[in-house]
Amino acid sequence: SRLAQERALLFLTFHNPILMTDVLTVKDGPVGIVTLNRPDRLNAWTRQLQSELFDALEAFDHDEDIRVVVVTGAGRGFCAGADMDMLNSISASRGDSISGSQSREQWSAPQPETRSFLMAQQLSKPVLAAINGPVAGIGLAWVLTCDMRFANKAAKFSCAFSKRGLVAEYGTSFLLPRMIGTGNAMMLLMSSDIFLGDEAVRLGLVQKCFDGDVLEQTVAFARRLAANVSPVSMAVMKRQLWNHPRMEDQQALRESVVLMHTSITPQNSDFKEGVRSFIEKRPAAFRPVSKDNPVIVTANLLIPAGSKL
Image 1 (cartoon, rainbow, N blue to C red):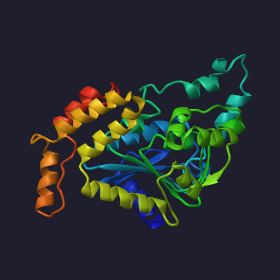
Image 2 (image 1 turned 45 degrees about the vertical axis):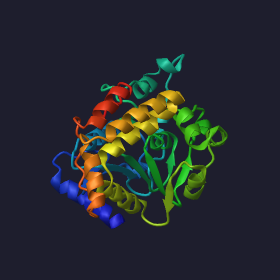
Image 3 (image 1 turned 30 degrees about the vertical axis):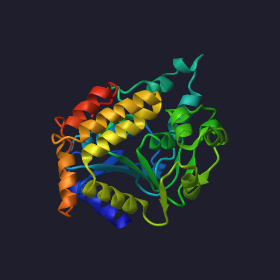
Image 4 (image 1 turned 60 degrees about the vertical axis):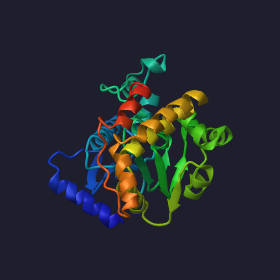
């Protein structure tokens, strides 16, 4: 609920000595909650917000107490796209070419830490987007990099790029058609039409939408994952599902078979615990992901560089 979110932010204020300005983080048991915190600007995207968001995601990925990460927006929106003041300064800047514009260069230059815009896909833990309100442009592009998306039924979606004289930015040209098909992606990208949560579910862009508090519902789902599912299974499945569709069928099949045989061994403690808990009719007590787990070791040998678990 909104009250629960306010309590979380209050907890953060009194218990975290270093506060981010554009992003807030809090632990809710095994769930890490990241809140985009520019509500007066509908959480419009800036370089500062991007840097703090990526910092928060990395911190939760390295925290053994956290099993699932949820990202939402403060106030009535998720992210309205790029900050219009920034876009206005770029469009008004002088220069013979876009590359000569200092404003454009400052926005487009890679982060000093060279983190990819697709970083959420490269983390070992599921990243869920709880879309509480309007999401457009680069905000929509970023939620496509999340592992699952949940939305309020009244949330408004728009690609927005074509109405600003822009192109399919930040991976939308390959992520969107993969999720909803080329024709639907063409329709949304070229028209920049606004559509709501129900339509996003029908298209396959969003997994579920809710009438009530989407953050509360998404955290409840995240808690079920954290309580019932092996973190090793989630980590490796995540890599398989993001990487295998980009491979040739036979290569993806070979990797899946190798990982399957590695997972069904006594050395895989999660496999042993999963079977034992089923026989004993009790909840499983899975451990955090260990780099020494044989499935993780094997996955890291197979998975492309830059996406290690």
